[in-house]
Amino acid sequence: MLADPRRPFDGESDGRLLDRHFTARDLPLLRVLVEERAAWAGLAEARRGDFVLAVDEIATNAIEHAGGRGHLLLRRIDNELECTISDRGPGFSDAVIPDVLPGLDGAPSGRGLWLTRLVSDRLAVSAGAVGAVVTLAMRLR
Image 1 (tube, one colour):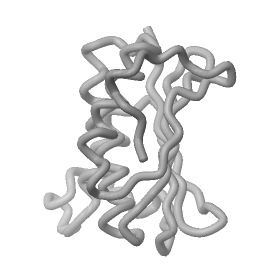
Image 2 (tube, one colour):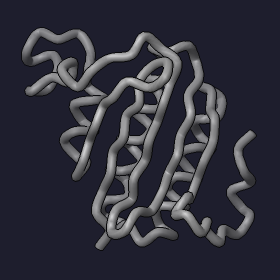
Image 3 (cartoon, one colour):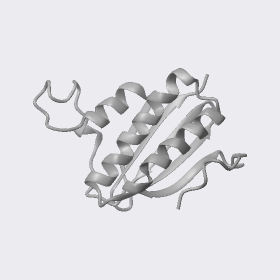
């Protein structure tokens, strides 16, 4: 279960801002919590919407393509806000991320990954113990 977004947030000593398992029904609250924690961490308002959108795209991919659930870890590391989303799906590599806007190159999917790469300062895709691990980050101020 996700935390109550109305509760004050003090942060964690290890940089963790949010550490949650999620399903499709959690996505609306997850977006609120990510935006709240991103603001608390100091991500500029101009970039915050892009960050929340990118996180939502990756979380939605975990639900749609990897068994209906995932895990999100949001951390502040030095001068970056980093979000890692893992799932238990079949896995994939960053080779599936299109170079141009999907649809223009004939690819039927991949817009969320393409968009995430476009707006993030750092994006990495790796294999987890089971499934995929997607890490995206944006620099703070």
